[in-house]
Length: 417
Image (cartoon, rainbow, N blue to C red):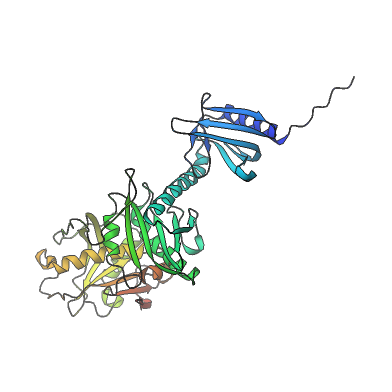
């Protein structure tokens, strides 16, 4: 007698079997729905119930219960299972099972964290922009426009008026958010010609906002409006006073010779090359004195200036060097300019032994950005357009090569809007 042929499993049966197999083989199984924190799965924290046409998957922890109807398996890989769900209105959705013990799943966990914070950002925007429509909110990268997935960004609209907004998650690089915010603002203005995108709102973890406020105070208010908000777990975001930077620490260390690294990197080599050839970089500058690695502080933020020089009229020049492309070059250079400008106004340089016998001009310092000609990031010019007009910036493109005479291939001053 021939053996009975076993009927193939339905998509729902295959999903149930795949889920059980995955949970048995995983060391740290987690359930992730995009936009929500993960739920750790243990034998007593989930339940599968068969129904007609789907499986009800229920999972819970101490804070919430998640229940979804599973209709099949969309994709399967070692340590990862993507399930198809049936949402309200019979719309399809996705649910992920992953083994947190597998390093290869870190990318999905990062994306999940971005989505979770993106939803928190949405709630912040609703509190601070009541009556406005959140037309767009993204946590994805836009490589063409140099927009990072690390910082969720949004477009808010009321009629033909709009604002750009961006937020820094608690564990992110807080110093980088303003650069990406300005890039986002500029992109929206080009993309949405029918909207008047008036300004940029920046959301920062409470206690980290002072350095960004100091930067914003040196941006051009004629080019855009700005708002900074501080958030925490205690309530809705609080608007920051852009006129209050707290107690500025303006200590300038006494001039001294600082030892170089034993094995200098490309930027140290570039600095060493330029220090002895400053007039070739800019003919207005005195060949000496030229100070490197000057330590100064502002807004409780300590920094090292690349080079500090003076011209024949006694006007200071802050020279920021980069050997490779950097989105953050303009705002890092702005930090140094702010320090030098404040120390200049307070008369700190002669007190600390800098520029002896030279009467320093009280005019704001010039800011020179020097890099190999092919190493300026395309976004640098965008960010520089938002600098305050009093900050005279010049980009200087150098011939790529170390050790020989400095050769300038191009120089241009930024246009102020």
